[in-house]
Image 1 (spheres, rainbow, N blue to C red):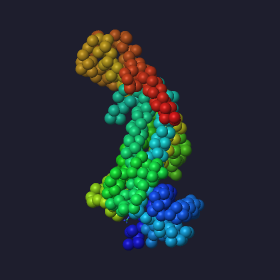
Image 2 (image 1 turned 120 degrees about the vertical axis):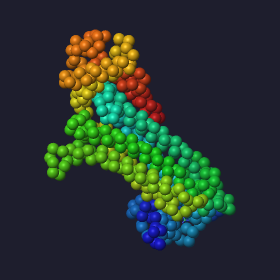
Image 3 (image 1 turned 90 degrees about the horizontal axis):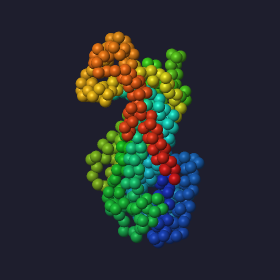
Image 4 (image 1 turned 90 degrees about the vertical axis):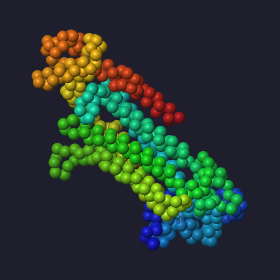
Length: 446
Ligand code: ARG
């Protein structure tokens, strides 16, 4: 029982939240004359001393004391004597743990948001640098159309913006104080829930005590936001892994974020990116774990809920590392723009431009233009030429409506420049999206 029951090995991470919530509680008990002002002051000072001990020596792990709440109360009693027993008036470990954990998750939302903001800054800075750098754009990982590197990086800026929006929604929703819900039914003591809520920085007390002690939606919101964010980071990591491979050669990863092989001296492995990709699996697993833990629980608290913390702690740690790794990778990688341009020039990436040209300049219906372009690409393949290397005469054999103006449309530069629709890949459009992103980020500093 001792072994299965103990949560102190992991919930000791809540110690500072536990102290803060206990201090808020006892101050309120004093103000409401539920305990004397003198006892409240003694308890509060004692809690400060326990906190100081934890800060310098760590939290002792005595499994008989089960969790951080009992550990703190027991140490408090050693320090100040039986008056320590008045701290737990009008509360239960059920509202206590719900409060502590909310405070911890709230801080994690804020830390996560700050990390993602830094990643957005890195993405925008590199996008700004590469507004006009040309690379192949892919669908099905087949060369589709030329795009600009800045455009590609800003796609991730948008994903991270949605992650941050999700985080901020969830944080707003979860910022209610469970403290004072007691075991499940509330309490007969004349407590002031608004006061403890205010001191702990919550927007308001929770409205239903049964819900308050059994709700872990805030942790699930955190994990689901974390899972989706990790999925975005994993996709970005995968791009770096592909780009850094020798056949691609689009990017040289920072030495600080890669490793050598113990046997093959030429190798530089994208380990950090691969671990970000791997961590996404564990973070998604953590979200699944807590959903499954919660799904069958009747109201109110059940001990299953003690298992809420390890997945959240694990996900938070892994995600923080993943964000730091991807921020460094984005900021410090060297992009081989020449190689990317070459890759875009191969693979008939401007075939769509030929079709579009036939539509605009020769008034050919798009489906027919698509067909003609297919014949041109086939010819280019058999002759081993890029589209702009095919002699005009040969093009005219396929369709005599093609004239020499077509060559201007077949370069990768013309191709990207033409795609200036809102949100498109043209350098002009990407530059204005960079400016929009910069303005958004600048607004946040205030
Ligand atoms: N260690 C417990 C947890 O983490 C604290 C709450 C215990 N409450 C109870 N009634 N046993 O969930």
